[in-house]
Length: 303
Image 1 (cartoon, rainbow, N blue to C red):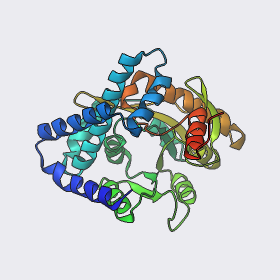
Image 2: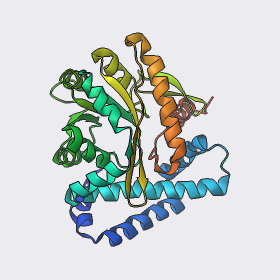
Image 3: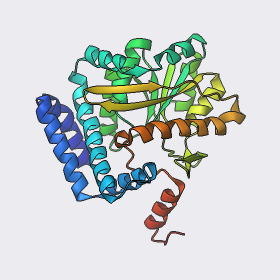
Image 4: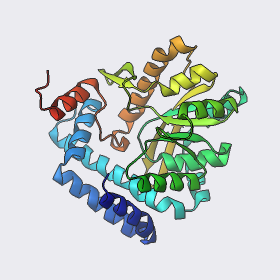
């Protein structure tokens, strides 16, 4: 990311929180609608992804879905900029009134080996995280190391201010996987997004009926530590946020990692399919789309 973009994010953190909420909503909604009309690379990728999620949608329905998806994504950023000054108690109360399956976290921690919560790039997981911190204490998660470093540090400081423990995916003092395993052995909670694989070691799955690869991390950590593996869905409501914690996914050791990852994919698909506009996936996910993107970048014709 360029220095100009980093500066823009920094200004967002300082300025957007100063706007009246209604003005901020209007501003970000207008920006989302402009992005939808412009149809840039992110909007085109979102459209392609949503076409796989809602294959029966025609062109006009997809247009509307992309617009709503970009509005949802803009809402996430607006809330990200404003969350440090929002009423944390009110956020907790709102999530608490709109969460189902919270008992699975309590039961998992009662087993004594920690809990791994696997979720998607949907809704506002920071709002869900503030609920989790109030209910169960700090949790640990991993984030991509953004560039420039100043932007990455802003994201880390922001989430640490909410009570999260943030580990960089690369370049940390210790390997993130080692630290997360330690936290689970301390009977704590680890949260990982599991709907996009950034490594060459992903697990092949069927996702919305098409081949894809999802990260092995959530199932691997559960297999390695004996932690309970819980899929979770997060989406927006008109006046807040909803969270669904699903029943545990059995792992059964290292050999069970592929089956557990497929089970996560199935749960993710059900939640995303129910709330497609709140899935903020502006990158390729499916194998065919990744191959096409690589071929385009290399100037080749897709096979």
